[in-house]
Image (cartoon, rainbow, N blue to C red; front, side, top):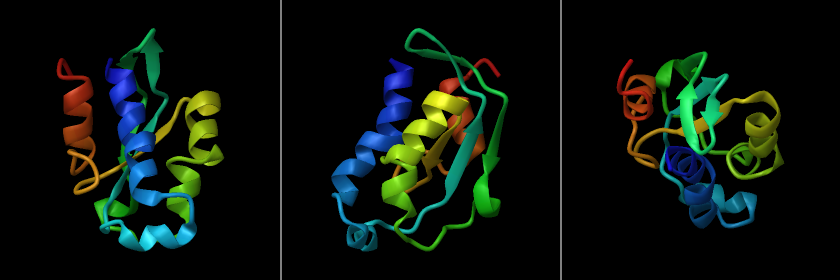
Length: 110
């Protein structure tokens, strides 16, 4: 359930926002990004992670075509499926503002 939510937020949610063209990036609000390294799943549930990094010191990044490649394209898919990492957009695109909130949601036990 939580894996599906994490993947949904990182990819599926943005598909509707992004569309298929790089020009669609202009309609996304500026937002920060979190990189979760070494995410481990037991079936559908995330059970561990190595580290979470607030990219660019949690500053909002300028919009560019990276969104269509990193979040929803082959880059984002390869990052998760082959390396066990995921880039999660921050608020207002997702409910989490930073790594502390993101990790607290998926791993409330610490």
